[in-house]
Image 1 (cartoon, rainbow, N blue to C red):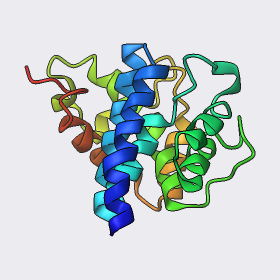
Image 2 (tube, rainbow, N blue to C red):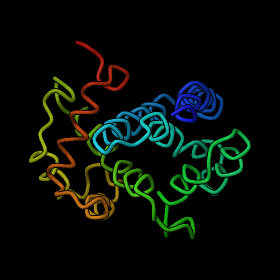
Image 3 (cartoon, rainbow, N blue to C red):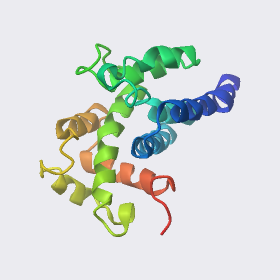
Image 4 (cartoon, rainbow, N blue to C red):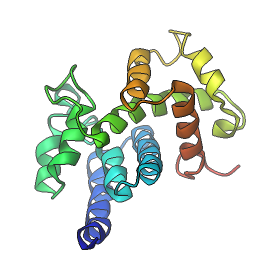
Length: 192
């Protein structure tokens, strides 16, 4: 319990500081906030350390803006030097397995991080087409839009399904959880 309190007091602050230091693009920050929110939601559901899971969500693309060619490998030493534990670093590396790293997703943290990454980007992109933003997004609409390969073409649909499979959840349920978590974050769903 004491180590969890220390995590809350220091590492989440470090995570925000690193995010501000390495990511200047507001859209990328918004994506990281989205993944953070969903990871915090799932940590609560699973009884995991919510600040640790939130930190993984915040930092999973830490090196994308400055080092896109070596992402996420460039983030690992930065995270370790900043005091984050091996599990979090492995989750960050694992979210890009096997395309960019040789670190498979074994822990729950890594599987959920992978499951939350692509889908949050897709949900956010879809919400921009709606006058009410995230408040008008439904899982069935997301699933239907996933069939449109021209929409959000950089989002890997196979990874979205694979992520839900890896966490053992029906895709529609996962999408609803993602939408709900993102709706409750004013940084990604500002009040009208």
